[in-house]
Length: 481
Image (cartoon, rainbow, N blue to C red; front, top):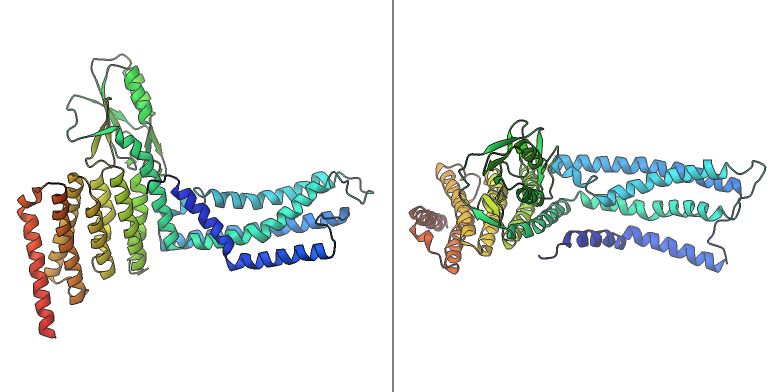
């Protein structure tokens, strides 16, 4: 998935696809009949009427469009309320503030109401009262207003309603979030190439740069930070103190700085560094991969809650979470928490695969382990991600994640907490999937020519315990038969 414009192409395809719906087939039929009737009766497409006729038409269009605007806003608010209740309030920004199409559509209806009113009060009312006809120079403008209003009502309105109906579909929402997250990964890919992973940060004495406001850390201007290190050679290094997307409290460190020598420009330097950290009331998906993950996880958690009870949506979220992780690995996402921009003394608290994997799967497992469909898909997507891991560090992360899930699930089963939630057949399939996942880890290490897993007694012991449980379940099943 190397195409950076995948999201825009898919959005355009979806909007054009709506024109194939039955609603538009009816519109095409009526339009074709009107054109045919116009030509057979040798009529004219241009509207030819007197002053009173134009006034009536503009009044009718203005009042009709104003009513439609109110209806459209009502539909949008209901859609937002439904989406917020069923999925997550964090997705609402995509319906208006992040949807250019919705903004243009609503603006077009409001704008055309104003256009019709302005034509009536500024253009037609300027004609002397005793004059009953409209000058030819004004007719094209008035015809545009009338035909434009008809186009908005006959084409844009049904398209907008169908688009809104499709946009609150669970599959559409999860796919849109995933595509936005892919965009973020593609944007970060180039910067990851210029970073080197570090495990130990410099231990030199450093000063704290405190936040002057509260909010979410939205982005960091790394290019400008790099330029500052070139302008001020006394800077030993700059260190990011919080992850992108973290909530920053006022008077808490947002970054650290160390100096080679005492500097008289310390206040100026630290103020300029602080300005390169963008803080706001909303998280920004531009550099924040975790924001997209958070939205998908929230939708999945709400779907498997007793109030909604929609495991299919949770499964859909797991599919996209796994795809996001595979795209991130393909983009060579850092495996460690800290990175250093090459040839610069700038240390970043970068997004790393371990945090991405933990955020994607931990909560869904915790709340979904009692649901068979969720557990099966969770173990499936983990296994697929393991097979796509091309670095030993990546396989290590999946080994820890799968081992944690496997240990907890086995513990819950042995306590008897899962026996009344899953049948023997279901338990056999879940246990079997986990064993296949453990086998995939060994195979992947072998492909990477690394056998470090063989030295871990806990890993081999876990695999052995699962195989024993499978044998016991199969024996119990044969006894019942």
